[in-house]
Amino acid sequence: MNIKAMKAVGRAGAGLALAGLLAFAGPAAAGDNPHDPYEGFNRAMFAVNEGIDTVAAKPVAKAYDWVLPLPAKASVGNFFGNVGDVRNVLNNTLQGKLADAGNDLGRLLINSTVGIFGLFDVASEIGLERHDEDFGQTLAVWGVDDGGFLYWPFLGPRTVRDTAGAVVDIYTDPTWGTIFKSAAARNTLVGLRFVDVRASLLPSDKVVEEAALDKYAYIRDSYLQRRTNLIYDGRPPRREEE
Amino acid sequence: MAARRAAKKNDTDLQNMKKLIALVFAALFATAALAQEAPDVLIRRVSEEVLDIVRKDKEIQNGSARKAIALVDAKVLPHFNFPHMTKLAVGKDWRTATPAQQQQLTSEFKTLLVRTYSNALTSYRDQKVIYKPFKMNPADTEALVRTEVQQPGNKPVPIDYSLEKLEAGWKVYDVTVAGISLITNYREQFAQEVRNGGIDGLIQSLAAKNKSLEGNLAKAGGK
Image (cartoon, rainbow over all chains, first blue to last red; front, side, top):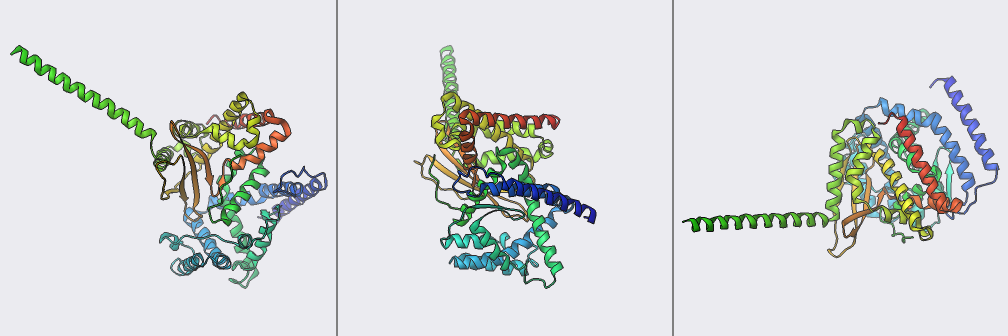
């Protein structure tokens, strides 16, 4: 991206941020949802994020998706998946799930060596499944309340608990700290991961756009359901009907 | 001689008749067996049938929503219980709706679900569907069939089907993708619409949404 285009994006972003803040300053939407006490703020930030996504994140992700052949994309995804196994080992241990921690440590060792720095997910091929855990889930297992739903610019949907979790995850994430000493290498990796994640969401964009009566509520409720599912390791207590 | 021939003819007639009866019974039995098809067998059969068609159909792969909708209508729809799905999505407000309103809600919700999820089919490429081991008791009237969609470089996505046993066989009443229930995800949105404009408000919102999607479809050159 050249400097002129970056400036244009910056201006668009600033304008959107201002619009978002103005919307926030106005009367907040009636907060009648117990899971969403900050709905007014959240909807404003959601609008900001939609703006950033339209002018910057989505076009970049689309270009990435179009340019890179599938094996290359798979390797990028595998690489960050392998880095994420560091977090899985740590958080499985913190939650007392030692068998899963051991399994994920095995994944990490196999994929970092035989899988050539994680570019190939050999561990999954031989049946070692990943157990996704992060510090937000660890806090939940420790009994911390979710604190209400929040929608952040860039970061997107998080509960208050998951926001705290995300901060700890960043501190314990090799990509942010320990793999490379150089800031340029770190920024490249963090940026690449962002684009990789965004690109992996491209196919669901259209579905959400078409399925939702209210896109914000659709994304919020998807996020909350997904987190509950993760906290209970895929077997959440059954919801009562009606 | 003639009598013997007649007797023999009667014999073969009888044999033919027996064969015919056996055939009719076999057919009846097969239909009954099909209706009693176990939930996991049903999900696997329908998934494989649909994906087989998508794999061969270049138009669907190129994003032809109309063809994808036709496919879902023909192959998938008969196995879903839409009235139950709509009732669950509307929640406690369902009881305040008149039978006519309930029918309208079901019809609009069905259109929306078919329209949006046919679209997901057009983005199918070369993912692999894994069917998880399935257990149930013969007396069970509810079942959960777990599957997983695997794609290179991405985390596998679990897709679970909740089914219930009706007279017409097993029917799906909810689909959960990566822990996100399709039905639960509409509850808050529906409740919000009902708070704002009553049951009729919700019907209107759904109808307007479907109309705008239909408009997009027409704009896309009627694909």
